Length: 226
Image (tube, rainbow, N blue to C red):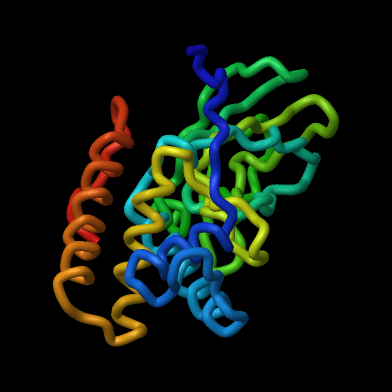
């Protein structure tokens, strides 16, 4: 028999939440979450994804940003979308990368006396705040339309806001997310017993397996059950 030829299977938020609630027998076969059940579970799902995002970097969250067009006299640029961290920044002339730039340590930058110097940027400072992240370049660019700053970054997991949305994880992680969500929801519903214990044990094992598999080269994952 021929194989399917696809590796695009996914779960919507609604499907994953329903599966998690069935796993702990809050829902029966063929049942779907009520409005209140879905709302509470979606909140827990976003909590879970947000917490996992700080355990990374995850391989699928490393991305290349749109090269920043440098503007004469402008030192600071807001990154969009907001990254969780900035990996590398390079200096390019007419779209051709010339050299990697060096990141400033915040303390060194604060003590540096020649912040107003202009020229071709050599260094950058990452300023990561609650709602935004900026890059400040030094020297301050003194040309417009020629220089750009390509960069790579670790992106933030996307929130779940609608039942029909996919979850922002690879296909291989879907069971891990579902079972760990079920473990969380068991606490919310004050459930206990052998079935819940099995779900919690499985959640830890799946999380460890997923995080162990999600590493390559210098990407280091902090291990531990969740």
